[in-house]
Image (tube, rainbow, N blue to C red; front, side, top):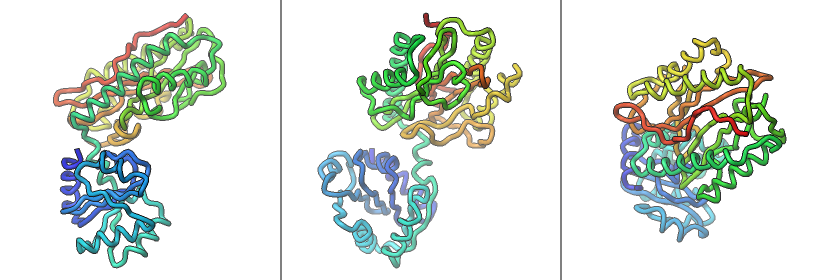
Length: 357
């Protein structure tokens, strides 16, 4: 795993004329090394690949970080880095500008002299956009766990239950079935709160004849799933049923016509144009989707502001919605892989209108 990813990183380093790169972000560290410990630094040159950590993780790092030389950085991380850079006659060190706070940068700048620090943006993230077969297999398992969780919740949700209790039941089921935890704070939004696109679970008690939106995902073996389904507790109003049918039409239309070669803007329009045609364009205020992987929100974006071209190997969500303040809302979301000819769904839960009770 590590050797292929490091090779690709070195190619990116060459294109940016960087002799060495320091990776401090936890997700990028795990992506490159496979190391799941909470503390570590990755230092890569064109000849060497080191994982620096402390005494607590030396055995774990040796087991997980195949192809990396494991270094105990001791009391001084910068001192160890400086020594390794000196061995390789490194003069320019790239670092992740989004991952390093200013105080740390100033410390490195002072303690690594005469090495020049070069800020880099998205160097590893650009590699992570394209998922390999191993990653896609894990993401499929994460999606299947989300699907099983949705089926479980259909037997749990009922009027009189609080959103908090529903979220607890949902997250407990995922963890009992292999998830490290949720991919993000679980959204359970019922009644008028379903008009809140990111309505995290609250103390509200769910009532009969209203909608409940569940947006959740499983963090599984380092990868995220992300699914949204909206169900009814009884018989909702005609207006709520209307917007459900419109959102479903928009989502199915997008899944049918989403193709590689489209820009994020063009993909977004597949859903947005349907909803706008029905007169609800102003009530669909977020993007149609986003990239998914080791983080729940990563590149590429599927939005009206994105000119990124979608390519095979990218994983994105498709999640149109309509939100009517004071009344309720609907969102339906799936995770999909862009393929050579179209897409392959990872989440497969039914999207037929479901009335519980």
